[in-house]
Image (cartoon, rainbow, N blue to C red; front, side, top):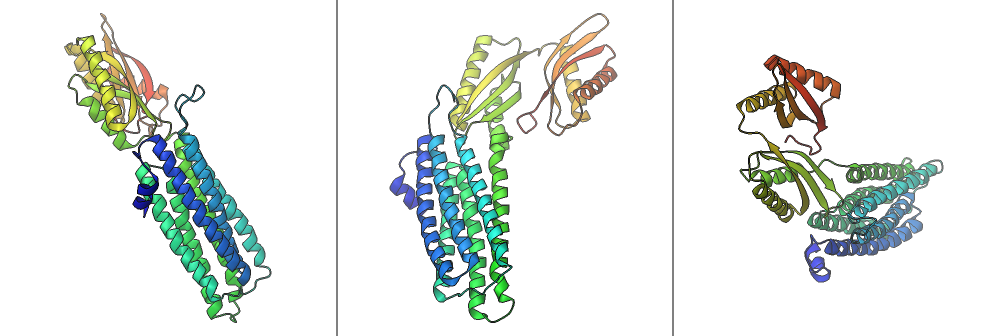
Amino acid sequence: MTSLLLKLFIKGDLADKNTRGKCGTLAGIVGVLCNLLLFAIKFLAGTLSGSVSMIADAFNNFSDMGSSIVTMLGFKLASKPADPEHPFGHGRMEYMSAALVSVLIMLVGFELLTESASKLSDPTVPDAGLLPIIILAVSILIKLWMAVFNRSLGKKINSGALAATATDSLNDCISTSAVLAVAIVCRVLPDVAFVKYLDPIVGILVAVFILYSGYLSLRETLDPLIGLAPDPKTVDEIKNIVMADPDFLGIHDMIVHNYGPSRGFVSLHVEVSATGDILVLHEKIDRCERDIKHQTGIEAVIHMDPIVTDDEDVNRARDLMSQRIAEFHNGMTIHDFRMVKGEKQNNLIFDVCVPPDCKLSHKQIRAAIQSLATDIDKTYQCVITVDHDFSGGKH
């Protein structure tokens, strides 16, 4: 069904930001129509039967309709082109819309919790006829289809907003199933004493479930806005593209920026031989930036770092220091290594890249590395710049 709807209403490459916006609009329209239908029939059934849990479930669908409208708006804003005030575009609006959907889910959960709890003081057995049961069963099937539709479309265009909507649809299936179970029990065992408490109790459980799912969804959608570590596969892919050239000796200081699902940037430093032809190396770096853009869709900016490769003393010092520092802390690396030789003292000037899990202060790191250097050669004096690994890996 997802492929059929895409074929009928969406033309163009799904990776294109304009096509993404059309996909978001399609998902929003489907969500609005389905949830409006579910709200109307559930509210009618809940009113006729007097079931608070069924009315609560109806208003859950009403909030989903509002969420669909917010999702459409988020995709529309995210597809806007860059402007002077927002040179990187508006892609993060999609993350913000997903976060707003999560907040709406939690607000509905709180309202349902309050309403259901108030019914505990004066519980009644709902008049569960056959029609409400049929309506609930049909609504579960509709929500299952919506979950599959949104998840499938979300994967096709890599959308966190649609993934959150799919999760919400699955949660609705669970909550509606609980309401359906109550309706069946009330129809089969209307005179049993405890049955009158089932409706408000299930309403409370549904509300708590909605609150928790909204919290999980909010936590997931806020991560890209706060600043999430890049996908390790993406980092490895970029590294492999760069290191495919034999003139590139190493990379460091990789930073990946995300301005939306289809708007990424990466900056990194590439080590090259100090004796290489600078014009040839510059051309290779330009080509590498284009390759990264073509293969990953990420804009790349590469800085060239020349290093000495034909001095035995420098090579020995660099190799020994790299080995000892890696043994001192797994994942800690050095780069931009230089040696200034003197009669009684040799200055080792380099940057040390500290992984996120290192709890040592900069002062402690410098002192420990200086001790390692002195153990290798008493003439070594380290001049260290401490920086941090933002790539989420060891490079």
